Length: 491
Image (tube, rainbow, N blue to C red):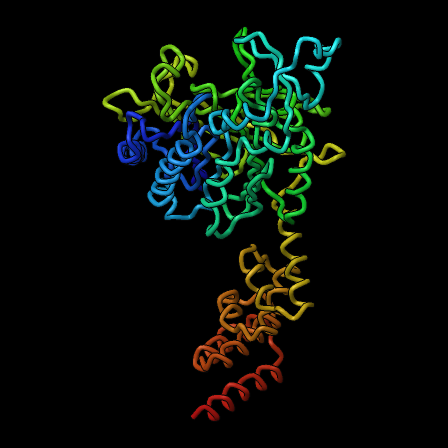
């Protein structure tokens, strides 16, 4: 089976002033796709897209008319993403995941929510206050002044421009799992609900004075419960956020790695982020009590300027191929090296290769047994089909059950026959029983053929399988009479 492929881009930094236009960028991505599907190893065409933050470049503090300039930047970002979805996903916006980054924060609005703290009002236990959860205090090293959030309601509006874009982008999208503006996480599903994706806002308490990334631990726990409440049993859970989880000395713009450990313990096996403007693939592990691993993958910046890229790093993006058993990922890194065109990147940190592989174990239950996600998913589907049938909607039950494997003598196979009969869905019965496994299935197939006026096929079926199934003579005679009677009535 072919892998499930995800286009992972980050740090778009879109702006009307960018030296690379949307048209050039889309053309470069399409041209690269046309190359990598024929390379060795070839890469599967992406079926989903993840954008891990920094959609726009943002505007500096003190910018005149900053609101309109932010709005224009988001217009450029939307034009780019709209065209990207059309070209890669046939216009299906439900298969594109977006999270905010620090460049999406409106610093000018954040600044207005602060007030400077007078020297005489500085708390005596200031060092301890800085480490309090969601503290209102900020220290500005540039001015060597202390500030405090004086207007929390205004402070919350620092991401309003992003959320307006977000809401507009998904307004007419169908097939979304749980996507809401202003929420600290949203839920998406890929690959026929086999992959669950949680898109986290890692900009909690991030502003013009506080550059760190943060996801509330309560939100990680709540997203886990929200996934449970969907009724799906996913084969793979993916977390998406923006900020990196490590940084160089004297930098404070990364996120506490303990947040990622909390994700691992809740079954997430793949984490996607950006922010650091270079590709990186790292396994992170915890013991509960057995080792549990998460592949944490950073995408480089798709369109940051030269002064924003790390030394020796060009613009990059990733293509991720998730194996058909959902237990490993191959990360391909693409780099813009020649004439604003993307090609495969040969990275020293990948041993000179253009890709790297990482695997993980499936999540375990509370007694340490590996969760059989396929069996659990089948149970959920069967339960939903039973409920639909009892509530008088057998057609929905048929729709659910047709997607399952229906082995001989299985309960779910019999449930499908019962639901199809109740819904008068004779064609489904015919399709499922080209070779009936029992006398009951033979009788149901003949009945379905009679109901669809396929009398000759019904007779042929009876001729072929009556002896093979040891069909009682009396029952065979009754079925032949029924075929003839209905055939005469139709005449």
